[in-house]
Length: 82
Image (cartoon, rainbow, N blue to C red; front, side):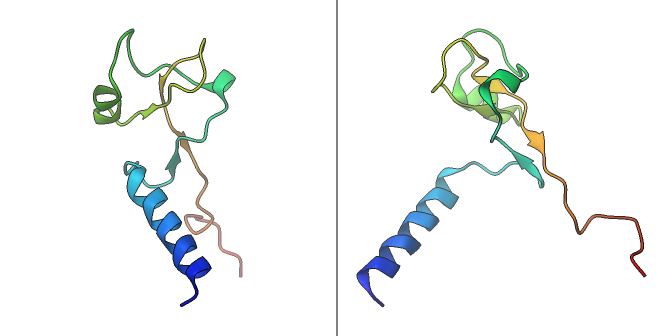
């Protein structure tokens, strides 16, 4: 394999392993102003994640421990398309 391909594979693997597992269909990609608080003042990342919440300290003035948002799963549709 070429070094570029190996580098990309390593990066993808590192990102996948560094993200704690969330519930199926949940994501921590929430705009800062849309975050719903899931913790308390002084909560640690470990405490927050044990509650099933997301933790991100990059933006000040918004909750750092917040609820993930559900992502629609198009395969989980009860409607029949026939």
